[in-house]
Amino acid sequence: MSHKLLPTSTDASQNQAVGALRKPYTVSQLIAAFTAELTRTSNYPRHARAFVKDCLRKGIAIDGVSFSRFTAELPANRISPIRKFLLFYQQIGQPDVIADPPRVRVPPAANDLILRFIRQAKNLRGDNSKLTYTKALNAFFLFVDEQQQQGLSASLSGQTVSDYVDHLRQNDYSPFTINLYLSAIKQLASWCIQQRAELGLVEHQLNDLRDVDSVRGLAVERTFYKDSLEAVEREQLLAHSLPLRELAMLVLLSVEGLRTVELTRLRLSDLDFERQVLQVLGKGKNTRKPIRFFAACRHVLQAYLVEEGRWPVGAGQRSEFLFSDLKTYQIRYVVDKQLQRLGLKRQGMSAHSLRHTAGQLLLEAGISLEHVQQHLRHETLETTQFYTKKMTQKTYLQQMPD
Image 1 (cartoon, rainbow, N blue to C red):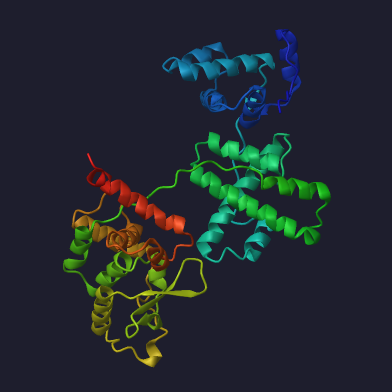
Image 2 (image 1 turned 90 degrees about the horizontal axis):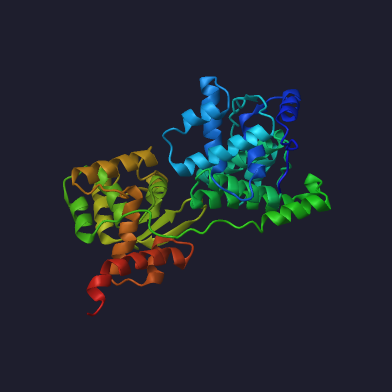
C-alpha cells in the first residue's frame, strides 16, 4: 500500500522549508519512502541505494551534479531508476540523509519465542536443522524490527511474511533459500497457534498467524545438484592403493550410499556380517534402518578391522564407533583428495556425489525404483525418481529410434 512520509508539492521553497524541519533520513528510511512511491516491485530501490551511499561516502550532495558523475558510465537501464529517485528526492524537499546505524548481529536464538519453538519442535532433531531454522527465524525478526524502526507495520502475519519473501527475492536470494526460510516461519506460526493459550493470543493475532500459511513460496525446478561417477570411475576410485581406513570410507559412501554424517555414526554393532545387514542411523533420526550389506563392502571393512586388531568383534567392542573421532569435514577432505588424485574431481562432484553414485548405479543395474528408495532411505519416491530422470537424459539419444 502506497504511503507518503511528506506531501509532495511543486513549490520548491516550501518543500525545502518542510525538509529542513524534518529529522534526517537514514539511507534505509529514504529508500523505503522511495519504494512506497513506486507502483510496482522493481530493482529501482537497489540502484537508488547505491547512488545515495556513494554520495555519503564521498561527502557530496545528492543533486544533479552527483547524479551526472555517478551515472556517467552506467548503462541506460541503471540510469533511469536513479533519475526517478532524484526527482522523488527533490519533490520531498531534499532532506538531510545519514548513514544507517551499524547493524547489530543477532546472536543465535536471541528471540525468546524462537528459543522456545526450537526447543519444543519435534521435527528438528539434528543440530544442523536447529541452527538452520534459528538463522532463518532470526533473519525474519530482524526484518520485522527494521520495518518497525521505519514506522511501518510489521509482525508475524501473512502480510509481513509476504513482504519478507519479496524482500528476499529483491536481494537475490535463491528460490531454495527463500522457501527454506518461509517453511521455518510457517512452522513457527503453526506452533504459536498450538500454544495460543500459553502465549495469551487473542483472535486477531490468531487470524494473522493463520494467514501466514497462505503465503506462497517460489517455484523451484527440482534437479540434481550433485554429479555422480560412472561405473568404471567408481571401480577406478576403489581399486587404487589406499589406506584401509580411507578405502572403508569410500566404499561405504559409493557402494552403500551412506551420507557423510551417517558414516560418522556407524558403530561396530551396526555391522552384521552374518546376516549381511547394515544398520544406518540417518540424519536427524533416532532409529536405525537396515540396508543390504554388500559383499564388496563387507570384505573391505573386515580387512580394515583386522588391521586395527578389532576382528573378530568382541562383545565389549560392539558399542565402539567404526571410525573413532571422525568428522564430516575429514570425510570431505579424503574424498576430494582421492578424486583429484585420479582426475575425477569436476564441478558438482563432492563427497555427497558418492551417495548419488550408489543410487545411480543400482538403477542402471536393473534394481527397482522402490528397492533403491528403501536402500537410500528416501522419505518419498519422488526423491529417488530424480535418479531415473538423470538416467533417461543420459540414454535418450541412444534409445530414441531414428
